[in-house]
Length: 121
Image (tube, rainbow, N blue to C red):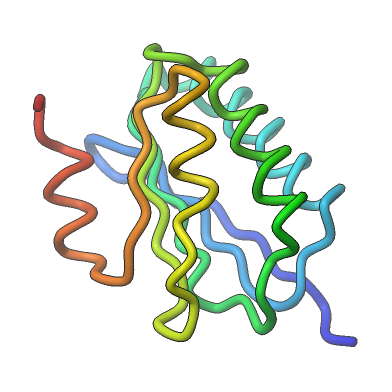
């Protein structure tokens, strides 16, 4: 079992959380708590989650519960872009989060996601 690494970077217009390794559901919940705290501290409501370094697929039920948490916690008050590994073509988190009222997008191309994150569409 590998260790999980979670880092936070603050950019001029958005916050970035980098998650690598094999995060547990509790570690994903911790990331969500950190996002809430950093949005409150910085006033920046655009969040980029770089999960391209995770080593294994995230369980579907974890994606589902995290999508629900994203929608219920942030709704339209924040905008999320999630970079997933190139080997993972599952956008279930995005679907659930969006259905729960979040503004969310996931994909494999960092530049496309950043462009979307910073847009007002």
